[in-house]
Image (cartoon, rainbow, N blue to C red):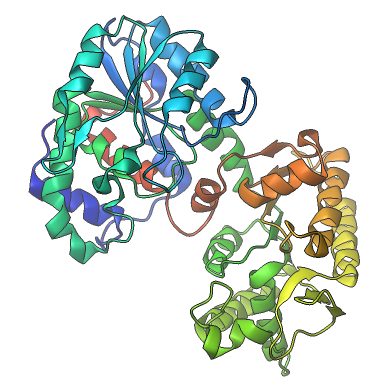
Length: 471
């Protein structure tokens, strides 16, 4: 399906939110319109199939060490091997374009128990032409074989949409259309997305599908969305923290679904809510460097419009009976515990009184919901402080134990991955929760305020495949 420059421009405008009349869809609506892997089951033996893989991993010395994302692809890759497809896996590793997927390719071979060929240089960036080495590798690949292409971020075009606005599309569309068409002409016309964590606007995830004849979600990816994430949409409690204040948008989207009754907040999100609540109550709460205009270029700075957004959130939430549980003391940059932050200071963790308050909130939630059928759901995202430093880890460490308390009485606790997942691994065990995701950014996108980019792309690509995307 050859893509014109004009069609690619329209495609990218939709990806970037540049089509104001485009309907806003729910996660369920996206999933309903995207094919699953089974719909490709009749592709004949020897068919090349392009797999956007979750290859952003750091394999340790043995299978099972640092390769959870690679192992998440196994069922999908085995599905293709059993049918004799030639699967060409591509994707990125980290943000450094110089990093290589060579070790990843070797580990995929160990996981599958087969030889995996690695193509280290597959694109001419000047002409956006896929090199002959790829076609040669596909030609000698046996039925059921697997090929891995080098780090897609080695090439600038993979990152072309990262910081782009709708107005930038006109100058990018020709090269992006050429890239998509090259993949369709020289690599494969069938495409599987099995990279749950790939939530960025990478061309491999959101542009290449435009030229494909057939697309499908991988087995693991479909399970994450259909089972675990759909359940999180009905969460009764959300535990939200982190440094980035734009998480307010995600929290607002979760609250707007109407099921959340309790919000436990920490981090920058909490200090914004704390200041907003003080204003609503006719007082003020100084949040230190986070509101100092001289620090407005720092990630912890909270602009005035975010405080106003937090005020609206709390005001609306209170009217709906939502409880906001916010810290009452803080561990400051010098390790001192204080009930205030104040000018010149910055909070690096919640204090012990806050931990006690959170624990009481959990107790109240357990008392109210432990008998719920189906089981009540809690979504936990982020950490409470700079937990990598022992001086600022206690708030996070204490709260991880609360996840086990809820799980033990039958409440379903989901951890959003990312730093929250690292904290669970450090201070608890995997069985302390119902499930821990492997991709924090994708999870927040699915539950929050913006659609997951690759779901947008996959839905658009599926529009030409007929009326039965799951068939």
